[in-house]
Structures are given as C-alpha cells and as structure tokens.
Amino acid sequence: MQFEHLVAVNQPGNPGLRALTRDELWRGLLRRALSALDFVESLETDVEHEAGEGYSERSWGYGNFEVRVRIEHAAPDTIVVRTHPLPDDEGGRLTITVEEPEAGHLFVRFAYLTPLPEGVVDGVDVAAYLRSAYRDTDVAIIRRIREMVEAGEL
Image (cartoon, rainbow, N blue to C red; front, side, top):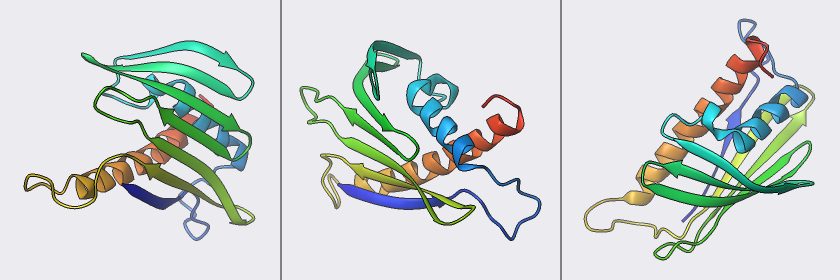
C-alpha cells in the first residue's frame, strides 16, 4: 500500500494560530523520530541501539510487540523511517518531508509505503482504515509539536 498526504502547518489567515518557524517544525519532527515516547501514547519503550551522523537504529516496543527501525534524517527537511522486516512482514517506509512553497507557508508531506495489500481482505478494508489512522496520527504530530513549542519544550 502506498499512501501520501500533506498536513498544513501554518494558516496565515488565522491570527489566533501562532505560526511555527521551519526550524521549530524541523526540531519537532526530529524529536518525534528520535524520542517517540513524547508523541505515541501506545508506545511503551524506545531504545536506541546505534546512532551516527544522520541516522539512528532503534527498537519501539508496544506491549509484547517490538519493531526495529532505522531513522535517517537530513536537515532541514527530510526524515525517513524504515521498519526492519519481521517473519510475517517485509517492513515498510515512512518519508517525512517539510515543504515551503511560499515563505511561511509550511506543509509536511507524509509518504507511506507498506507491504499491505489494497482493497478488502476478509471483509475488512484494512488499507482504508490505515490511511485514516495515518492521517489522524500525522495531524496529531503537528498539533503536539505546536504544543511543545508554545510550552518552550522545543
């Protein structure tokens, strides 16, 4: 399954919404990737196994389930999260890209590539469910980054 969408970060016509700078947005997205416990309620553990210039190898634990990920980042605009294959899953990729078509008009593009098939499987459209969940999660990430900036945490 491939799924891609944009999340608008700033709304220049909305004076009640403080605009984020590109640097604030980048620091928030990088924190989401490298300190996932601050963003993902269902995540129980986040262990770094190895890190170097522009990458981190981690394990994310969800109860009895653990996923290994490689996070690659290139400031100020791209983060790639690759999940390592599991016995019954070939792994996937999430590419996060900051876009600024005009000064101050920030967007984040989330592009998912997973081994899940499109369509209905056993009466359930899993892909549609995942697309909705991904969209909701990604909007929540931007909201959480905004909260962290306003609280002086970024």
